[in-house]
Image 1 (cartoon, rainbow, N blue to C red):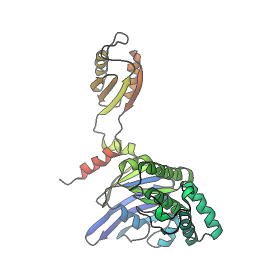
Image 2: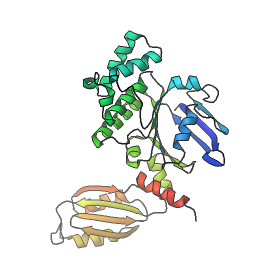
Image 3: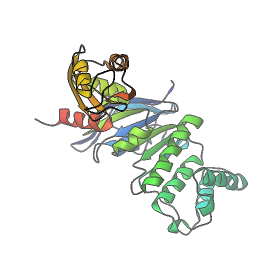
Length: 323
């Protein structure tokens, strides 16, 4: 995968305060990368550096093969930026705002209107294209902001807390559009947020940012394996039509519990109604499946617990907390 963004050892200080501390990461073409951390972690400062809006004290970086420190204007031609609160001319319609942005980017008047109409349709605002932006809802403004970003055909989109204040249905539509841009148009996306569930929905990889430092980066599965390698494997499943009294091949739920408990690597088995929960020293999901079926029980579902971004994030905070 070709890297569109390369950051190596970037540090940014404001007086004695270190906003970004020895930051290094890379983002590939068409990838959605989540920059995850609480407010004040250094995410916005990182974005300012990437956009060439502030200079780091040390380190090197490249965006679309361009050094933002030396050529900030060239970078801005390649990168679209959507902040938490997008500014528009309130007395202009959505369409008029888009055409204005297109003209600023050197697009002819006729082409600007055609492209603006296409983008209004793409972000689901066709019916509101002639409405004054001052009457747009928060979600509509953010969708218009996305169209505004796309009007110059960027290679990279940077989203800084873009879903704050949007209703759940609007968030869902917005996130789906981000994924579509990445998958179909190969646009690279840097998604900065503190909302864990949204980052988990759309990002290929995440970087966990705490106090100006990138503590970890990777996809959720690999981060989970690394962080929770000391945890026992947790397996849960459901047996078809069984209760404490009913029998399958002359075996009750209690008999099944005892059988499972005797399996190699099993620490603890709990059965409640038709559901069972197994704690084991290693992943024995496949063995459990085969064994239950061999005993004549119908297996409705079986899955291994995967630690999600919420657990990963809080584990890093726990491990990085001052003693």
